[in-house]
Length: 191
Image (cartoon, rainbow, N blue to C red):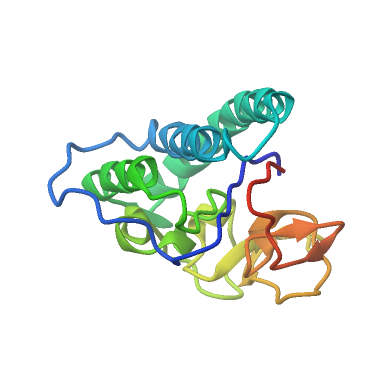
């Protein structure tokens, strides 16, 4: 997965956004979510990284914009198919929360459900472990849609530290490095 991730040491959850927020349409959420995380990463890490690294980070976030466009269709299909529930006001508060988060808060924008608060309420998959899925949006919290090596993709538990992986979605930690689930995120990094 091409994704822009930022983790800064410190608290586990970002500051709470305002309780009222306008509804964010389901088609706009993945892109808004990724852009908020990338903007935060660029702002927070600008003083910690060299100018070239910040430019590289911006370019990776632009690629992530393209990748998140593909996710929009997956999310909309999951909601339309009844495999997931989407809460527009919570999605809007989630995006605001990421944008307003303190730079010392740990934020991993590869996993909406892991952020807690409004982000965990924005999208809720309904497919239980072992159930057929089309994307990870379908799966209940803590699960992902595993299509390898299964003929029919199924929702399975996220993998523990040191387990083999192909993408961040597979790992409970949200970090897949060198094809292994890892929990060590450097202070400011873009994968």
